[in-house]
Image 1 (cartoon, rainbow, N blue to C red):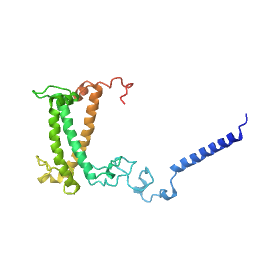
Image 2 (cartoon, rainbow, N blue to C red):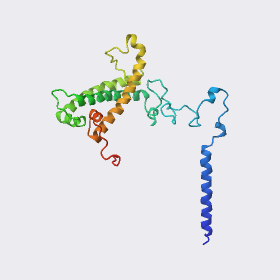
Image 3 (tube, helix red, strand yellow):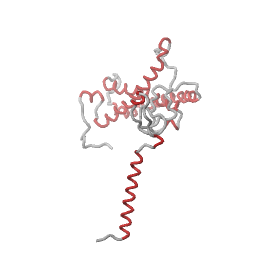
Image 4 (tube, rainbow, N blue to C red):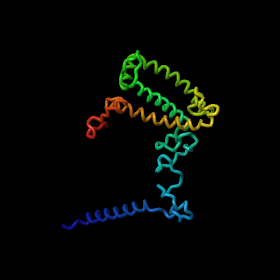
Length: 241
């Protein structure tokens, strides 16, 4: 049966809307004349790859499709412009680096302790899997001691942080260098060691998180998992969300 006039009008409007949307979508991918690429005048220019966007500004080395945050200028070791959530636009970059180093140093110690505990236990301690060690320390009172001494360290760390904000101290610098790796003839390698520390810190934070989640899911230690691999129970059907 023939369509009513109102139905014909609605159909025509729907088709017109679809056509306009298609044209707009195509125009979004077409370069604007103001940003049209110019002809290459040198061989070096001709060999450059296509840009991911036509907007001005530099793009992050670590996330090529995002712009480099304003405060990440590469002055700190390990700065590759990675800040997808924009924390550096809200907080002082020196405070963020202090926190990153603090968490990274703790993670490096935790990662080493996690592995050593699996392989060796002191004679006056009971062998406990790393995941259950937390509850065991809470019951024995060991965790309270750790929290007590950590609180003292946080007080001194807070005082040092104020000096960092005032520009009188480098983030994370507590003048702790018992081996003299940044003194004397090694002074020129200080920046190299700072870069190595921040890289190892980031890796340790990821590693320790992986250790813990792997232990929760497989009920195995890291070293045990290497020698006797056990997949996730029920994988690939099982989900843990």
